[in-house]
Length: 441
Image (cartoon, rainbow, N blue to C red; front, side, top):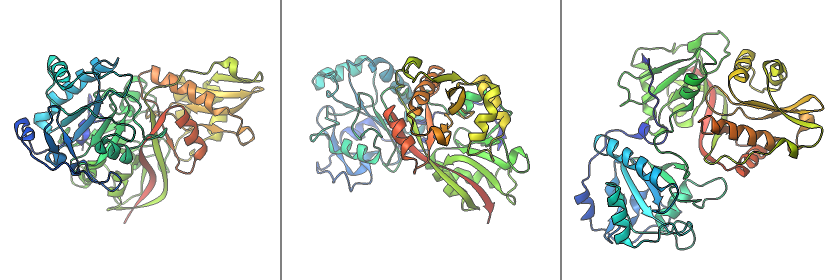
């Protein structure tokens, strides 16, 4: 691996999962003749099993997209999000269609405030005026009994925490080369600028001496190592803990750790901070994973309106935390074995951090972390079930978003209370992540 000086962060949304793909011309696509029968959406495994109609009525079976990463999106011509989304989708297509085989499948939909009222000819003209080159399909319903079978399948495979229904125009599904939906992003997600927030936090607020390495063949091999993965390990060696970022569909890139310039001592335990479970599974070809802790990543596209301090009970205060509060914070932190107290003191000096105080005593706290997420809220046992969490979560979610980050949290699968709280705020589940100690086989 080589040091990434002047590191250029890659998009979590599309760029990492683009690789060499077969090319299919628009002429080929438009002349494909396929049957119109579709499978049951609950038993289907791939978009390639479905048949849809293009904007001018021609039937297309989606197996013509085999080998391509795809974005499937519901579009509208009269939405407040239209201009930015069409612009960004155009930019993605122009940049990656030929070089990486990206395909974008746009489905007009008039179910949201009647913002796509036009007939096919009007929609084609609207797209042509914006120099759209990606593929347009027949207007469909995406919700309800009459929803397109394809869209029923997409929602079934990538549901939302507040319900599987599509919330608004420009909801995007990312499809891997095998036709499997792997990510869902809400309408307010900018499809270009979702770069990984660990890099963003490091560049904006250097709270620790982190190091980032990328593969020699970057960005064709989109894998990045983050050292140390956590700030406290038994031997205080920066290379004994790591977080690995690469697209889950390219988890085989983990094998480069043993074939390129080796940074890791493969004979010693490796402390792996929260990393996509597909990457951890690949590590397990070389290591045995011990002390596994799983968590689900939930993110929020539209931060809620903040709750004001006046709505809190009279003896309760919502306070911006300061370094002098960190001893109490650290005493409540359940993973103090992997994070040192000093990191908390640096975090609260640079990043948003709030606490709930009851009659002057710290009852609960929440802090933005060095990897861009929000540390899970911690509450003293005697103050649990008091309803304080919603105040902290709303305030920090809004402030993290105002600083240009996408709010996200890691929630343990068994933590129903946290999941319920964040779902009320509009957070949706994205993927599963794992923290573990990896020991050589």
